[in-house]
Image 1 (cartoon, rainbow, N blue to C red):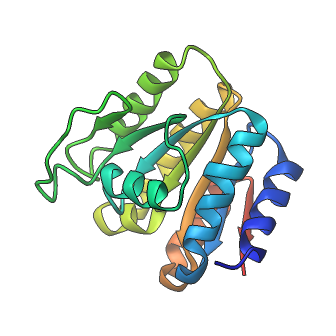
Image 2: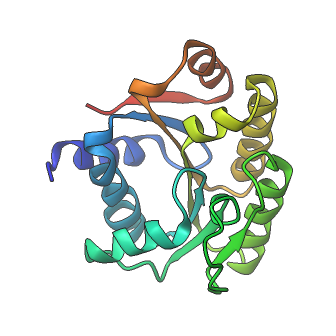
Image 3: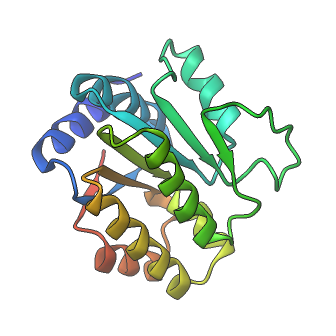
Length: 189
């Protein structure tokens, strides 16, 4: 793994602070570097819990991948939007809640709010991975409203907010929507 993408992410998160909605445009090669920077280095340094909204890969897969990289997931909570759709076994882990479909955007917001209640107001980093996956199942207008509502909720809680997008897969209408609903868009090279 290269350290450059990881360092860029950490520096940017330090710079912006909480309650700012950031879209991180990443390429697939830097995906795990960015994730390591956010979940391991940044969140540990700040003493943050992490809510990971899994819309492209199931929570168990992400958790296993992070564990294989020697990253503890004890401080992580997952909102899994994938497992029902791929008929993956729902292990009933206490750190995961499940949404039946990526089109059930209101339920995602409710599950995130539930996770905040479960964490009893502890500071938090929320990662939406990935907006590209949600865009395949939802119209841009509906997705825009969802992101606005989610960001408003998270900002009111003082959370660090990160929306991941895969730069190579970002369609022009989605790129425009993200520029309207986020506070900053950062491309990680």
